[in-house]
Length: 285
Image 1 (cartoon, rainbow, N blue to C red):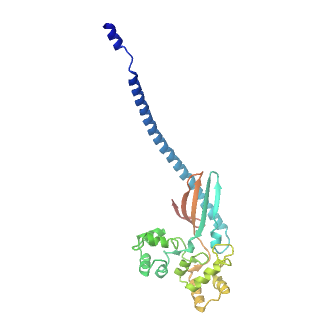
Image 2 (cartoon, helix red, strand yellow):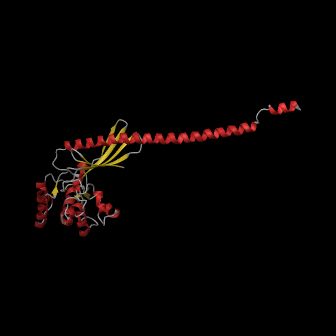
Image 3 (cartoon, rainbow, N blue to C red):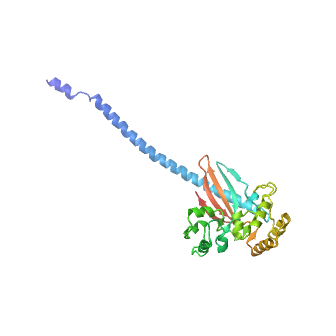
């Protein structure tokens, strides 16, 4: 009996118990590993995002410097859709940027425009135009601030956003302004059709090499009259807008729709407005 008790008390642990314990140990380490992996992965993603943002900001700043240098280098006294519309792409080490330029003088400045000019924009009546002009936030810093005006909603802003600006001297570049903006400036339909046809050139297509261009404000009337006969009323209207300074041929402020990309990662978009010597607006998406 004593021998039997000794053998019972000194027997090895049951193999099934060892297996269960081993499984629980493995489960514990698997859970621990999964938790650590999640933490480490999230931190790696964070570091990658910071790294991407860091380098893309420098790429965007390089693009601005490059664009400003091109603006300063341009010695012509006029700006056209063909000249501005050429896409620019550059590689810098492990990064690259690409952008297109449009000029803010192709749009109507809602800080300087009269109510009757704003009222000629799509979807705007005189009452709303007067509310914009009389807004306590005017002068607006960015065009999105007109959302503070009662009657301006997302649908209306989407119709207006390509035609308005807060970053121009207030005059409109006759070489680059759209038909809607030329109409808002006060030109009649007949004049606008003549200007549009002249700018498109022989191929009847905008922003191509054969585009017609106005090279100086003082030459606009003569250039257009040489292209097609103007009535006395059209000549008077166009001359009045030029003398008032509402119409010009060059631009001072430019909008860069810019994409910056580091390595093969997702590009980051920037909307930047620049003059020849400073940045007016910097938005990152």
